[in-house]
Each structure stands twice: as C-alpha cells, then as structure tokens.
Image (cartoon, rainbow, N blue to C red; front, side, top):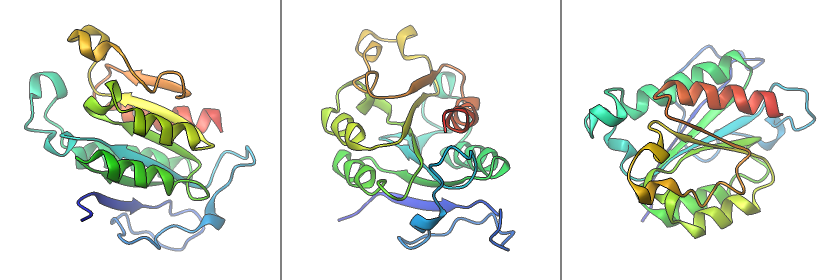
Length: 184
C-alpha cells in the first residue's frame, strides 16, 4: 500500500502553462527536462519530507513554527520557479516508501532536498539510497538539531549530503533551492 504523497509543481519556463497547481501522477516529469550540464536552469528538484512533517503547523509550533508543510513546499516551489526549476514533493511517514522515491530520482531529478525528520538520525536504508543517487543532496531542518536533544546531534546523511541547512525555520527550504542552483 502506497501511503506517500507526491505532487509536482513545475517551472513555467518554456512550457506555455502558467498554472501553479500541483500535478499528480508518475508521468508529470520527463527525463528530457533535466539539465545536468552546469547550465544552471531547468530540471526537477525532488523535495522529500519524512515522518510527522505532515503535522507541521500544529505539531510543536514553538519548535517548528505555525507554517504548514504545504506552505513550505510552495515557498520552495516559488523559488525553484524563479530559478527555472520545478519541484516534485513527496511526503511519507514510512521509511521504505521514501527509499523507493529516492530510487526513482535517477534520470528524473537534478537534486534532492530532504527534510527526513527523525529518520535523519538513524535511517541507514535512506542514507544508502541517497548514496546511490548521483546528484546534489541538500539536507534541511526547520530547527537546529545540535541545539536540541542528544539523539538529534547525529545525521547519518552528513557524509553524503552536499550540505545541510538547519535552524532557519521555513526559509531553510528556499535557501536549499538556492544552494542547489549554486552547486549545479
């Protein structure tokens, strides 16, 4: 059973479509839209949200703020559109579904931005799936994990991610898109 949620929010560049509504379905992105030649624009960025991020806006607002996950995704998508990219977002509370989504990135995504929540600290299967991906990886956290409980101080993604953005709240998502652009 697939309980994950995926949506595409595309770049309007060259598509003749001014819609900002999410498109669903596995055929919403074509591999031909990917630009890995360092030209800087074009292509899809996968944005992955891990467990409990679907509760943003109501879950511990003193730590995570009152913005919802949809608000964060839209902010990232707006920045991506401004830079000529599109975002495909996937959220799941299930580790295996996230691994499967990462596996689908090859040939489809120029980069992965991941806020994996608690899975950041212990999911070796997600770490290994990301290690097999040949593209930019940016880790994002709304809060600053090293300023919190001890178990949050370790990221199993640290050695494979190109960088980590933490503690800036919602602007971390737009910073991550800018980082992807700078690294491509």
